[in-house]
Each structure stands twice: as C-alpha cells, then as structure tokens.
Amino acid sequence: MWKTKRRRRGRVASMMAAAVALAAVMTASPAGAAPRAATAEAPTAGLNLMLNADPWKVVQTRRAPDGTWDAAREVPQFSSFYYWTTVIGSGQLRLFGLKPSGPLSMQFVQSTQQPDGSWSEPTPMKGLAELPVPNPPLQRGRAGAAVVNGQVQLAAIAPSGRLVHTVERPDGSWQPWGAISAPPGIGSDTFYSLATAEVNGELHIVATMRDNGSVLHTIRHANGTWDGWGNIMGVNGTPSPWGSPHDVVAAGVNGQLQVAVVNNSQIAVYHTIRTSGGNWSGWGPIGQPILVQPFYVCGADGANVNNELQLVFETCNERGTLFHTIRHANGSWDKAGNVQSAVDLSPWRPYSDGSAVGG
Image (tube, rainbow, N blue to C red; front, side):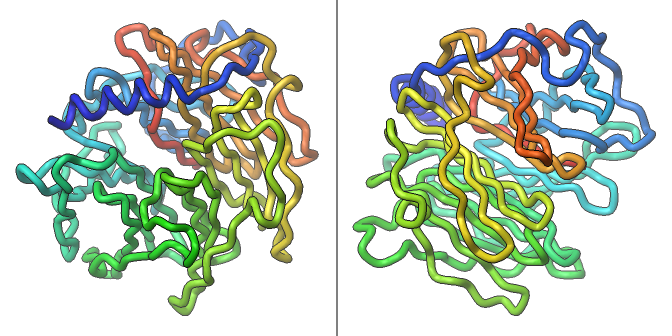
C-alpha cells in the first residue's frame, strides 16, 4: 500500500512541476572531479545529502568543502523509511525516519552515523507515540529537524496532514508530540510540505498548505512559546507567474532565514530572506540567471554550508537528475550544474523529498 501511494505522489508532482532552465557546468567545483570515498577526517563537513531513490531506497553522498563529492552509497537499513530528516550533533550525522509500524500506524525511529561511516541500527524514539494513518492515506508527508541551543527539535507532517513537533530531552528521550494548528481562516488543517531552520537560537518553520497553497512561517522561541503563523505571501505579495507551491527549503544563514519555494509556475523556484529584524525581502526568481535548459522540478533540498546557502534541485524526469547551486554571501548565485557529472548515481534513480544538512 505504501509503495503504491509513493509512486502516485511522484506522478502528481511531475504533472505539477513547471519547466525551468539549467546550466550544464558543475557549480564551483571541477566537473570531472573523481568521487572520493568518505574519510574519518571531518566526515560531515560540507553538504550532506540523504537522497530518496526509487524504488524505496536511501542513498548517501556529500559535497566536501573543496567542491568534490563523496562516492554515493545505499544505506539498506533505511529502505523501509517513508520520509526522513537529518541533523549534525556533536560532529555526527543523525537521521530520523518514519516507517510503517502496523496496518494503519507509523513510527519515528533514529540512527547515527559512526566514525567509520556505518550507521547504527534504527531504534524507536523513546517517548514518541505512533502516528495514526487515515484509511486511505492522505499523503506522504515531510519532516524537518534542527539543533537549537544544543537540543534537537523535530517537526513532521503526519500521514493525516497534521503538523506535529517534539524536542529531545538531555537524557535522549523525547517530549510527547505537540500539534501545531494551522492559522484561522485557512479553511484546512492539512499541511503539504515543511522545512525547519535554527536562527539566532530559535526554531523557524516554513510550511505550505495542501488546499490553498499558502506559504506560512512561525517561530518557536527559546522559552517554548510559539508565534502565530504569518503568511509570507501576505507580506511579500504573490510573485508572477505563481502556481501551487509543493516543496520548501529553509536555512539560517548569517542570522537570517533564507527560504526557497518550489512551485509549478514557469518560474519553478523562488527565493526570499527574512532579516534578523523580521522583515522579508521580495521574491527573487531562481531562473534565467542560473538555469538555461528546460527541465521539470519535483523538489529541492538545501542547507547552510560555511555561511552560504547550497541548494540541490531534484527533477521529475525518468533519470532523476540532480542539480546543485550556491548562493554566496554577496547575493550572487553560481550557475547550477549536474551532480551526476561529479558523482556516480547510475545504480539509482534519485527522487524528490530527500534531506540535506550542512556541516
């Protein structure tokens, strides 16, 4: 049942995605650089990717600080995960994934990458209840995590479409799920995608709604209180052309929140920044400046790497092509380039909705 639903969502995303353009040169690194095996020295430095690969696989690679890529490898113990997110804590890469636990229930489990590159066996997250699944399942969902003041905070879209949140305690257990309701007037409490980021010691969540395509933002402060949802579209206006947003990336960079939204208009990705003072910049189309060949965007992943935003675009074509770009501190963007020209992903078909974290 779960695999059928997953493929169906991929087809929906493909139909929703819009054509944008893309350059054929690898971003800020030698395009022909040979893939390098992961080493024990600073194994998480750079952009760490856990790619969703069809059918039903998780593939790991990393773009190192010098621009070269680690050899890609499959992590078989994650093959049953429905979706997942990653953080880096104490120099180790941690993954939190949702997997079926019964006919109509799912459970979050966690795993940590060891210094030799292997992963611990996924174990249940103590204190977290299973998440019920409606019959039929509504959607696949998403998750996001961030380390805030030394504690991991996890937010997830449950199979029901509700948004839930938890915090890891010092003893390794987790607070019970807390529901985060949509703002009044939206007409639905069903979320479609989300992203999380730590900015100045606070958790920021950016989410899109399933029914009306709003792009919402909220903050969990250090004292545990939440701001009310704000609609970024209400502040920035609606860019033109604009379709239905179906994926979002958020990253804290130099004390500011950077957001990229994937939608199904002719401009497939838009970017905006929330300053430390709470003001939003206008929408910037990530299109012709860095993209010149037509392709379809299913999703995006990204993270702060060395105080710059790095993005990976995931296409909807049969090959699952990946492209990478960097937004530098001066506001300029690198030409996007084909990830597969630098790392061999031929044994797999990369799929949308993976995870990225910077180390």
